[in-house]
Length: 194
DNA sequence: CATGGGATTGACT
DNA sequence: GTCAATCCCATGC
Image (cartoon, rainbow, N blue to C red; front, top):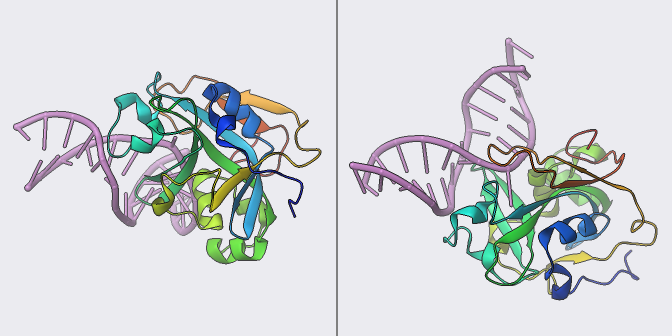
Protein backbone atom coordinates (compact mmCIF):
# COMPACT_ATOMS: atom_id res chain seq x y z
CA UNK A 1 0.00 0.00 0.00
CA UNK A 2 1.00 3.60 -0.38
CA UNK A 3 0.07 4.86 3.05
CA UNK A 4 3.13 7.11 3.25
CA UNK A 5 2.96 8.48 -0.27
CA UNK A 6 1.20 11.80 -0.72
CA UNK A 7 -0.67 12.73 -3.87
CA UNK A 8 1.33 15.35 -5.76
CA UNK A 9 -0.26 18.82 -5.55
CA UNK A 10 -0.93 21.03 -8.55
CA UNK A 11 2.14 23.11 -7.63
CA UNK A 12 4.38 20.12 -8.46
CA UNK A 13 3.34 20.45 -12.11
CA UNK A 14 3.65 24.25 -12.19
CA UNK A 15 7.30 24.09 -13.31
CA UNK A 16 9.20 23.70 -16.60
CA UNK A 17 8.20 20.43 -18.25
CA UNK A 18 11.86 19.34 -18.48
CA UNK A 19 12.03 19.48 -14.69
CA UNK A 20 8.74 17.74 -14.07
CA UNK A 21 9.30 14.85 -16.51
CA UNK A 22 12.35 13.29 -14.80
CA UNK A 23 10.81 13.98 -11.38
CA UNK A 24 7.77 11.89 -12.32
CA UNK A 25 9.95 8.81 -12.84
CA UNK A 26 9.64 6.82 -9.60
CA UNK A 27 6.22 8.28 -8.74
CA UNK A 28 3.11 6.12 -8.47
CA UNK A 29 0.24 6.40 -10.97
CA UNK A 30 -3.05 5.07 -9.64
CA UNK A 31 -6.59 4.59 -10.93
CA UNK A 32 -8.89 2.74 -8.55
CA UNK A 33 -7.31 -0.45 -7.28
CA UNK A 34 -4.65 -0.53 -10.01
CA UNK A 35 -1.33 1.26 -9.53
CA UNK A 36 2.21 1.22 -10.84
CA UNK A 37 5.50 3.10 -10.54
CA UNK A 38 6.31 5.36 -13.49
CA UNK A 39 9.49 4.04 -15.12
CA UNK A 40 9.33 5.96 -18.42
CA UNK A 41 8.07 9.46 -19.29
CA UNK A 42 8.52 11.94 -22.14
CA UNK A 43 8.35 15.76 -22.17
CA UNK A 44 6.42 17.73 -24.80
CA UNK A 45 6.29 21.52 -25.24
CA UNK A 46 4.39 23.87 -27.53
CA UNK A 47 7.70 25.31 -28.81
CA UNK A 48 8.65 22.10 -30.68
CA UNK A 49 6.72 20.38 -33.49
CA UNK A 50 6.69 16.98 -31.80
CA UNK A 51 4.08 18.29 -29.39
CA UNK A 52 0.34 18.25 -30.05
CA UNK A 53 0.37 21.76 -28.58
CA UNK A 54 2.54 23.03 -31.47
CA UNK A 55 -0.54 23.82 -33.59
CA UNK A 56 -2.01 26.00 -30.86
CA UNK A 57 -5.28 25.81 -28.96
CA UNK A 58 -7.79 23.52 -30.69
CA UNK A 59 -10.64 21.37 -29.41
CA UNK A 60 -8.25 18.44 -29.24
CA UNK A 61 -5.44 20.33 -27.48
CA UNK A 62 -7.47 22.52 -25.14
CA UNK A 63 -6.52 20.51 -22.05
CA UNK A 64 -2.80 20.85 -22.86
CA UNK A 65 -3.09 24.60 -22.32
CA UNK A 66 -5.08 24.23 -19.11
CA UNK A 67 -4.09 24.27 -15.44
CA UNK A 68 -0.96 22.38 -14.37
CA UNK A 69 -1.91 19.02 -12.88
CA UNK A 70 -4.68 18.18 -15.34
CA UNK A 71 -4.73 14.85 -17.19
CA UNK A 72 -4.51 15.18 -20.99
CA UNK A 73 -5.89 11.95 -22.48
CA UNK A 74 -5.95 11.55 -26.26
CA UNK A 75 -6.70 8.78 -28.75
CA UNK A 76 -3.70 7.41 -30.56
CA UNK A 77 -3.96 5.81 -34.00
CA UNK A 78 -7.70 5.55 -33.52
CA UNK A 79 -7.26 2.67 -31.12
CA UNK A 80 -5.38 3.48 -27.95
CA UNK A 81 -5.69 6.09 -25.21
CA UNK A 82 -2.55 7.78 -23.87
CA UNK A 83 -2.26 9.89 -20.71
CA UNK A 84 -0.17 13.00 -20.04
CA UNK A 85 0.30 15.21 -16.99
CA UNK A 86 -0.19 18.87 -17.97
CA UNK A 87 2.63 21.14 -16.74
CA UNK A 88 3.65 24.81 -16.63
CA UNK A 89 1.35 27.81 -16.28
CA UNK A 90 -2.17 27.86 -17.66
CA UNK A 91 -1.95 29.09 -21.24
CA UNK A 92 1.33 27.26 -21.92
CA UNK A 93 0.98 23.99 -23.85
CA UNK A 94 3.30 21.50 -22.13
CA UNK A 95 2.83 18.00 -20.75
CA UNK A 96 4.55 14.76 -19.76
CA UNK A 97 3.51 11.56 -21.54
CA UNK A 98 3.47 8.55 -19.20
CA UNK A 99 4.96 5.74 -21.30
CA UNK A 100 5.47 2.79 -18.95
CA UNK A 101 4.80 1.57 -15.41
CA UNK A 102 6.11 -1.14 -13.15
CA UNK A 103 2.84 -2.75 -11.96
CA UNK A 104 2.48 -2.63 -8.16
CA UNK A 105 -1.19 -3.18 -7.30
CA UNK A 106 -4.24 -4.71 -8.95
CA UNK A 107 -2.26 -7.07 -11.17
CA UNK A 108 -5.14 -9.51 -11.61
CA UNK A 109 -7.45 -6.77 -12.86
CA UNK A 110 -4.69 -5.53 -15.16
CA UNK A 111 -4.27 -9.04 -16.56
CA UNK A 112 -8.01 -9.34 -17.13
CA UNK A 113 -8.17 -5.99 -18.95
CA UNK A 114 -5.10 -6.73 -21.06
CA UNK A 115 -5.84 -10.38 -21.73
CA UNK A 116 -2.21 -11.21 -20.93
CA UNK A 117 -0.35 -12.82 -18.07
CA UNK A 118 3.31 -11.65 -18.02
CA UNK A 119 3.77 -8.74 -15.63
CA UNK A 120 6.37 -7.21 -17.96
CA UNK A 121 3.72 -6.86 -20.70
CA UNK A 122 0.95 -5.24 -18.67
CA UNK A 123 2.09 -1.59 -18.67
CA UNK A 124 5.17 -1.47 -20.92
CA UNK A 125 3.82 1.15 -23.33
CA UNK A 126 1.61 4.26 -23.29
CA UNK A 127 -1.40 2.48 -24.79
CA UNK A 128 -0.86 -0.62 -22.67
CA UNK A 129 -0.84 1.13 -19.32
CA UNK A 130 -4.05 3.04 -19.98
CA UNK A 131 -5.77 -0.22 -20.94
CA UNK A 132 -4.41 -1.95 -17.83
CA UNK A 133 -5.58 0.87 -15.53
CA UNK A 134 -8.92 1.36 -17.28
CA UNK A 135 -8.19 4.96 -18.30
CA UNK A 136 -10.52 6.28 -21.03
CA UNK A 137 -10.84 9.37 -23.19
CA UNK A 138 -13.57 10.65 -20.89
CA UNK A 139 -10.86 11.24 -18.25
CA UNK A 140 -9.39 14.03 -20.38
CA UNK A 141 -9.33 17.21 -18.33
CA UNK A 142 -9.63 15.46 -14.96
CA UNK A 143 -7.46 16.73 -12.09
CA UNK A 144 -4.52 14.54 -11.03
CA UNK A 145 -4.49 16.20 -7.61
CA UNK A 146 -8.16 15.31 -7.04
CA UNK A 147 -8.62 11.94 -8.74
CA UNK A 148 -9.91 9.47 -9.66
CA UNK A 149 -6.57 9.25 -11.45
CA UNK A 150 -3.75 10.36 -9.15
CA UNK A 151 0.05 10.53 -9.09
CA UNK A 152 1.84 10.20 -5.74
CA UNK A 153 5.34 11.03 -4.62
CA UNK A 154 7.96 8.25 -4.81
CA UNK A 155 7.93 5.48 -2.23
CA UNK A 156 11.06 5.23 -0.08
CA UNK A 157 13.89 3.92 -2.22
CA UNK A 158 12.42 4.96 -5.55
CA UNK A 159 13.35 8.62 -5.30
CA UNK A 160 17.09 7.99 -5.54
CA UNK A 161 16.92 5.68 -8.56
CA UNK A 162 19.16 6.48 -11.51
CA UNK A 163 17.40 8.10 -14.46
CA UNK A 164 18.61 7.94 -18.06
CA UNK A 165 17.68 10.45 -20.78
CA UNK A 166 17.22 9.46 -24.41
CA UNK A 167 15.34 10.30 -27.57
CA UNK A 168 11.55 10.19 -27.68
CA UNK A 169 9.82 7.32 -29.45
CA UNK A 170 7.51 7.22 -32.45
CA UNK A 171 7.90 10.85 -33.56
CA UNK A 172 8.19 12.09 -37.12
CA UNK A 173 9.05 15.63 -36.02
CA UNK A 174 11.60 16.88 -33.48
CA UNK A 175 12.59 13.25 -32.91
CA UNK A 176 16.14 14.22 -31.99
CA UNK A 177 15.38 15.92 -28.68
CA UNK A 178 16.58 13.85 -25.68
CA UNK A 179 13.34 14.35 -23.76
CA UNK A 180 12.64 10.74 -22.80
CA UNK A 181 13.40 9.81 -19.18
CA UNK A 182 13.69 6.21 -17.99
CA UNK A 183 14.50 4.32 -14.84
CA UNK A 184 17.89 2.83 -15.68
CA UNK A 185 17.81 -0.91 -16.22
CA UNK A 186 14.10 -1.36 -15.54
CA UNK A 187 12.48 -4.50 -17.01
CA UNK A 188 9.24 -2.59 -17.51
CA UNK A 189 10.21 -0.02 -20.17
CA UNK A 190 8.40 0.17 -23.51
CA UNK A 191 11.77 -0.60 -25.09
CA UNK A 192 15.06 -1.92 -23.81
CA UNK A 193 18.17 0.18 -23.28
CA UNK A 194 16.37 3.40 -22.51
C1' DC B 1 -18.09 18.11 -46.66
C1' DA B 2 -13.83 14.89 -47.92
C1' DT B 3 -9.52 13.58 -46.98
C1' DG B 4 -5.30 12.33 -44.48
C1' DG B 5 -2.36 11.38 -40.64
C1' DG B 6 -0.99 10.09 -35.99
C1' DA B 7 3.27 10.69 -28.97
C1' DT B 8 0.74 2.49 -30.93
C1' DT B 9 0.08 -2.23 -30.67
C1' DG B 10 -0.17 -6.99 -31.97
C1' DA B 11 -0.19 -10.34 -35.52
C1' DC B 12 2.21 -12.11 -39.14
C1' DT B 13 6.43 -13.13 -42.81
C1' DG C 1 11.52 -7.25 -40.28
C1' DT C 2 6.44 -5.53 -42.33
C1' DC C 3 1.72 -4.01 -41.88
C1' DA C 4 -3.29 -3.33 -40.80
C1' DA C 5 -6.65 -1.73 -37.38
C1' DT C 6 -9.51 2.43 -36.34
C1' DC C 7 -11.20 7.25 -34.91
C1' DC C 8 -10.67 12.03 -33.65
C1' DC C 9 -9.86 16.08 -35.66
C1' DA C 10 -6.99 19.40 -38.51
C1' DT C 11 -6.91 21.00 -42.92
C1' DG C 12 -8.47 22.26 -47.48
C1' DC C 13 -11.95 22.78 -51.09
